Length: 214
Image (cartoon, rainbow, N blue to C red; front, side, top):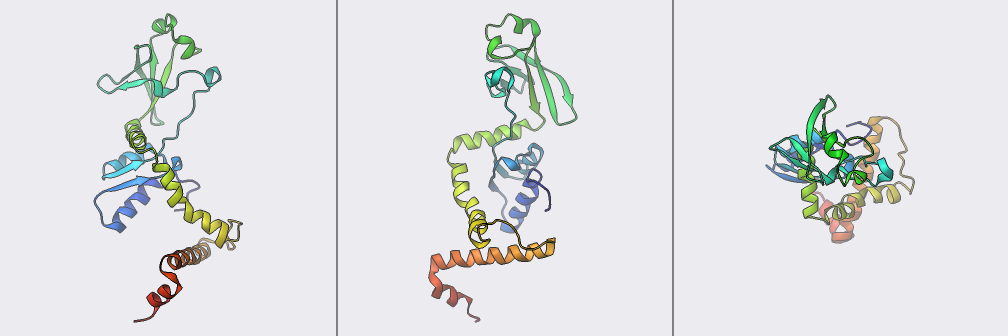
């Protein structure tokens, strides 16, 4: 994969891992860079349980002091949101960019005692992603396991940090150019890392014994 970011890498990497491990189900723990509602939904349909923090924009109106979307409760049976004042925000329009807009009743907002904490406009709007259910499922899993991201940093990020700071001379940059050459350099770096880790676990003599030709 040669994409500039990880936002489209979740599903292909998850499916490749599932195939390599020859398993029917997996738990996937990734950072917010992999947050992609459509791909998360596709993963869930294949028993690939996502634990990924959703990327969310902050409501900066009112100096960031107004209610965030999380303060509004979505009701699937009504396809509507219920606000902190127990009023409905109903669906008004859908966008091609996988989003839907829900509007509050202007008359309800105008007489609401919580309006100053909710919106600076005539009424409040809430945006819902087409695959919001997949985001919510992932969010609940992380809430049930608060230490998940800490474990990820300690296990998944550790090899990359070691590769950059130790094997690459604290520069974190590749010496070569071109995809094939880069693959070769990274393969050597990963091999060196794996050998160092193996030596830590079984000792140099243990590694030598395992590398001997039968």
